[in-house]
Structures are given as structure tokens and as C-alpha cells.
Image (tube, rainbow, N blue to C red; front, side, top):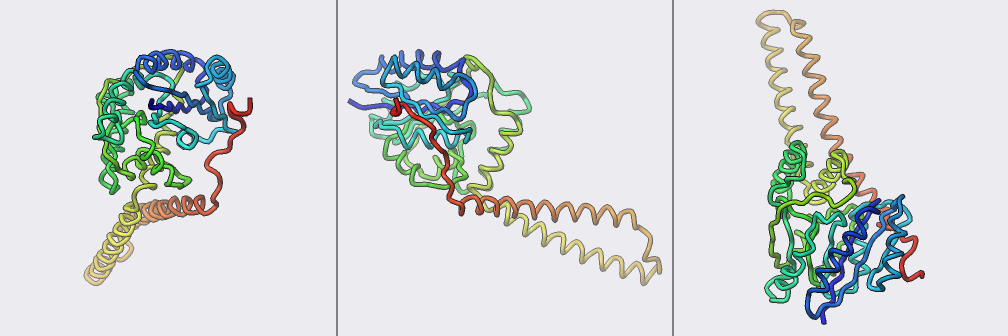
Length: 311
């Protein structure tokens, strides 16, 4: 019998956990010849998330949990789940039930056919997103796919069912600054995509603000592309060429009209604009240097405070 590990990162999700457990368990019990385990990751929650994990574990020993010492982020939670999952097939799901559990049956059948190593999902319409978030998300996928050598599918969700072999390949990538959508694409393997309509959250509110999404988008671009550095070089060369042209214009105008002072307001604007470009390019270099700095520290990606094994 095959075993499916359901990895569920959670941060302040006390309202959703039991609903998710009941709905997903119903689907797993309908699947023939399947063992299962739930592996809940408490990512430093400040509500009753951990208490609910413990309650479910007492009721069902196939429910396991890992609790972090503080909030390390969803990427760290997913990594912890992958490292501690014992199943032949591993899936990662959001606890808010925006990822439909009923798709697990089809996903498992596709993997059992032997044609694929991963069955992944993508959003059709993003109907749960605000117009601004839709626009920014679309822009992000266009930008990152132009910059990165790794294909990142537009609308890709973290919800996917993978073989143990693929998960082991993901675990071999030990970078601290993780961007799972890029890592999934980087390791390759045969992947089938399933589209579905977005659902509303079953309970609670999203923990992803536009600011956090923006930071996550920058993480993704920096993690899988060095093209921003190349672009900053070309921007610098362009402005050097522009400066040379301005020097020629000033010299010619001075010789012909003997008026080198005229036009100082426009000159101030040009200086401010070019200074802004320089700071922007320096900022790009600074971000890459900060990532190198964090990687060389070799700090743990997460720290575990307690698990179900402690009981």
C-alpha cells in the first residue's frame, strides 16, 4: 500500500485546521489501498494552532506536527514538511481549503500511471484576487519568465503531489533564500498541470499582504536570475554615452553662443535623475550581496521547538 504525506504549513489558522482535516480525511479514506499521514507545521503561530494540532494527534495518530520556535515563513515550513514526511508520495496544501482535496484522487492516479513524477495545479482565473493583485501577479510572472532560465508557470500553486524521488531532489537544494516555485521548476521531472477555479477561504484571513507578496516576488527574481545585474551594467553604459553627448553639446554651444550657464535647472534635474539610477543599480548589487551574506552564514533554515514525538 502506498502512503501519502499531506504537508500543511500553518500560521495563525486556528479557525481552518479542523475543517481542513475533516474534508481532506474524507477524500483520503475514499482512496483505495492508501495509507496517509498529516504533517502540520506550526510556523510560530500566536493563536491556538498548536493546541489544535495536539488535539488532533491524540484523536488520530496519523496526524503529526512540527512546531517552530518562531515564525520562519512558509518556505521554511514546506522544507521542514518535506524533510520529515515519510510517505511514498508527498503533497503540500494550504489549510484554508483553497486547494481542493478532491483533486488528490486524480493526482494520485496520474502518478501511478508512471507517466509523471509530479502533478501540479494552477489557478484559472484568480477570481479571489483583487484587481490590483491580479495585475501585479500577471506582471510578476511575465517579468520572472523573461529574466529566469527556469520556467515558472503562470498561476502555479504550491499544491502538488510529488514522488519521493522528486522531493529528495528538492531537499538537495540547501539554499537559505528559498523560492519553491522556482525550485520545483529547476529540479525538472515530468510534470502534469491541472487547472481549477479559485475558491474562497473556508475561514480566517489571508496572511499575505501586498507588501509581503512584493518582497516574495523580489526573492524569486533574485534567487533564479542574475539578469538584473546585467541590466544595471547596460543602464550604466547608456548613461555614460548620454553624458558624453551632453558634454559635446555644451562645448559646441559654448563655442557658438558663449553662454555656458544657461540651462542650469535642466542640469539639476538630470543630475538628480542619474543619481537615482545609480542608487537603483547599487541597490540591485546590494540585494545580491545581502543574499550571499546570508548564505555564507549557514544558519539553520528553521528551528524546531517541539513535535508530536515529544509526547
